[in-house]
Length: 413
Image (cartoon, rainbow, N blue to C red; front, side, top):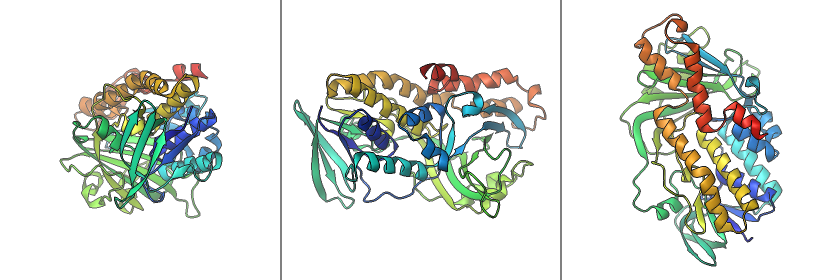
């Protein structure tokens, strides 16, 4: 088999390159940015994603910089306890759940690609503009950051890993509209703050109708001042349809009034978010599922294939599953175009199900149920409002759809 062109050097493209190298298949990544920079805030790698990264020999590197999450706790916007469940190895999985800065995770992947595939494995400043294919191969055309033409790449197949605004997807589906905005914005921030609860606890609180927060640490130990780097995500219903840009600067003034009274015994949320080191604003967008990803010698992976609500760490984890599945199909297939179709057959339905699930019954659905049952009033004891078995069933069902229910994942080994 010949060379595989990977368009995009994000999480999916880098994971795919490592996976193809592991099976002895030559590939090269073409990345739009002139240079990599430390971007974004925190993300979560769940056991199904960590399982695949472990097979690539990366778990120890992740453990050096990421926080091994011990539990997920849910609270009302009044700070009242709703539900708690252990996570990762604390829940009996063979693999941990990591909370980690996206920049740290990306750098781990970049370093591993350059170490294993060589310093020229990633070609920078090559933004895909179009492609053309024939029975004999594929040619991908590029421009630089200023729009000037760059040398084209020739290969046997091309894999589009260039995210939400994929040029390859646009060429395959020219009549598709812009990303779908659903009236919710997210403000993602980082703050230096004291450890809370167990020090490795992830928290979800409130609900988007009245203000929702996701909060978790992404630094392993407190610094000399006893502070940790805390990642927080504020979600609000709003008509502020912003540009879909993961690095658009946000303003605390736009969200602080909603959370000004969030002073809880386990965490003073209002004070924590007053002086962030980083704030980014992002609209909650996705795209309708596609009927296919593969056309001849080109296919879509990750956010290029199935952009979904950024909830529950699914963007990163589903991208990792895509990359690993594609490499496996290449390893076991007799030809590359056939491997792309086999990959699509394996992953399209599963990933599209997560897109739809995130719209109707996302991983934070517990908060919606409690918000509705309580009428947004303090409820005292959660047991007087809803059975714990019902709460557990909500989270268990989502894990099944997303691909990391414990029984199924453990059975894979």
